[in-house]
Length: 311
Image (cartoon, rainbow, N blue to C red; front, side):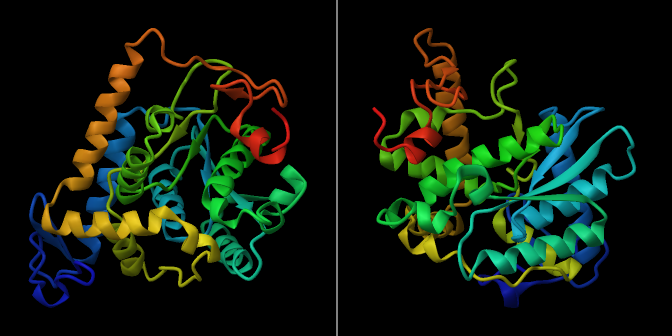
């Protein structure tokens, strides 16, 4: 299905003439369930190969919240790499400690990891940073997504290093990437716009890969529906404070009326990154004077959150 837009206009699969479950634009095509699964998995495999995301001998830590994107990512990587003994997967779940929300998503994560037979490691904000997200956000709830994102990224890096991972795979899809670009433009946040966590510099960040970065959100949901495992989970209670919610609605409408909008936004970001890389005055990686972690300023974002009084 083309969810919510063209549900009544589906025809037959272009490959087998069976009933189509999705209509994809640019280029226009329709697929039945099995052919759609195969097509999407092949596109993910092509993205991984084109960007040399995974190499023989890699141990890939999959950031696994239990939601739809990370569930699709774990399932696809398991299908693509389980036959190869020289590449291993480990699922890592970061429990932020959001009361009434995280418990259910963690249960969903445990179920899928167990079904796939994938090693699963769970780490809490309390064990990593001394307190859960609800308490860390007291009095600054409107900063929820920023604080959570910064701490979750650090938590993933710590957990991935602890299990000997060589890469971290995240479930960011095409919509997520485009939304981030537009949000950074709206905020005038050039450093965040040009930051690239796929750095392979020695002693720097553990490289991150985004195998789903070219796949629209609606296709990921359809992929899980076809498999009969789309998780029905609650929405994070802090979402109401997020600029991303407004940007998501805006971009979805633009993409519907002007197909290719999200892809062009990401291409613009990549062009800006290329210009910055050629600038000798671009920010260099240094060491945080509090925790010793890699960062681009004197104090890293994590320590600014955990130690707000330190100047």
